[in-house]
Image (cartoon, rainbow, N blue to C red):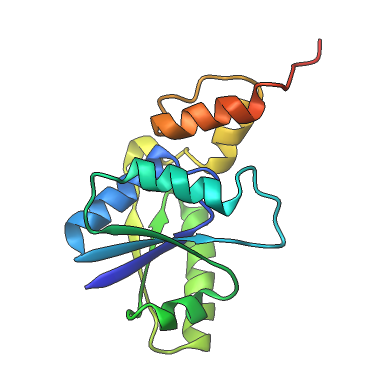
Length: 163
């Protein structure tokens, strides 16, 4: 069975990687689909996010990195599957993901959404938290893959903290 794991991955965290690795053990094929959301201003462009994800999962043979814009249901229709995987960290994630899953189901009744609960050590971890810590030159090397840590340092190297 093939599954799509969509998200912004701006940037990918160790929590995302945990979901990807576990999905790769439970599904024949995992497509990690980076959303190119034109209404948001990401720190990393899609090309950068693709590169970091590809580097981070290069040892997983059944994982493919792709990107899309627009509605997830349209991307799913083109992907020869009807299964979407979403990770859950806390109850608020469930509420948000449930709304999204129901909206997708209303647009295409064939789409199924599966939820995978994150490991306890990743329940606090989000791309937003990683970016905030990194923007203040905090150490995020335990929270993200090495390639992401290097790219975050590069993005924020010319920013200075005010006195």
